[in-house]
Length: 467
Image 1 (cartoon, rainbow, N blue to C red):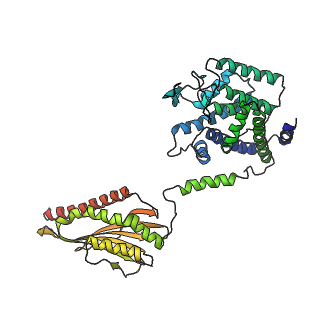
Image 2 (image 1 turned 180 degrees about the horizontal axis):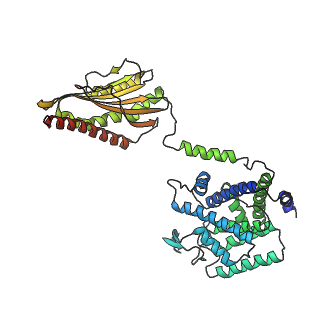
Image 3 (image 1 turned 90 degrees about the vertical axis):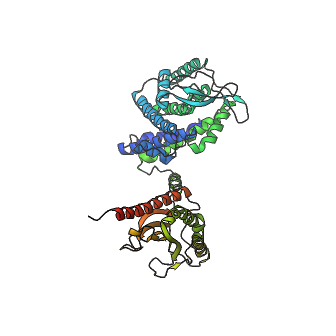
């Protein structure tokens, strides 16, 4: 038949190259399984990416923020694939019992899923793996019409007829093996025997038939979901050829891949690099620490508007609670064009308003990049005659090409310590369009506690009699 000319040629070429070397076979089987597990689940709406599927199956790593049901579906599908491979090797007959058992392996434990009553009221229904549907699972099409599958009452008889038809066809073939696999897939979907997992089951059973006839695993790609469903719809309308052609094309792709593996060639498909690169970009560029902005005059102005002005005002609000403990206090804003430069510019009059005005002008009006800036809080004359002291705190910002680093130091102006003490790191970030202000508030609250600890220690020191 003309439809099968190419596929027969590919199959004959592969048979000549068999058996594959064990390492080649395992390498290509791993690729098939990974692609099959990812794509078959993705067609049904699973949210795990190919990279996340690989991490789950090869390394047992779950994907943060993804539903546990999606992870269970991938693991269950992988178990079903392995179960299917054993079944084919053992050359056991296909039975309803096997189909129900595979469905149980696929879905695992019973679970609830959203549903609707016959009148459209939202509800939940329990999915029991391995059990034929107990209520209708018809679907509403895009045109608003109801598409009817087999009723729960008719399902057992129709499944029995499907298995009997298949076993008769295997005994006395009238169809090409690929046509048989495609026809079984279609008939199974039309029955829709289970409450969930019918699409995945149809592709598993189609592959069972193909594997039994010496064809490699056939993966229907998630990217081809629309033409796949369109071909099934054409079969529903009485034209089965588009669906058969679709399956043939996918079987041919699997044969070509297997032949490349048998010949020792690369099994990366032409678009594999694009897929892997797209996944890598998604993984890297969606991270919190992705570098998107480099320090420059525009970033300099933006970072003041987005974070420094807020940080200065909130920290001032936190620290002003200590003002009553001292005779007077000052707030200043300082900056340098080079961290190593001794030329430091600072605000005058030592008030919050002047510090804010000075900082605003520095970051908005300067035509040279600022390398270091700081908020300096000074308190003079602690109100305890027996142990008066002056205290300072510096919050330092160091601006690098792709990130900024925040440190602080608290020091005694009258003691041995001073603002040149080694600062303590508290925050590092890339330059972003917006920042988490709640995180800044939390840092400022912790800084206020550090100031409290410093003062409290001074009070204890004053109240402790000499040894």
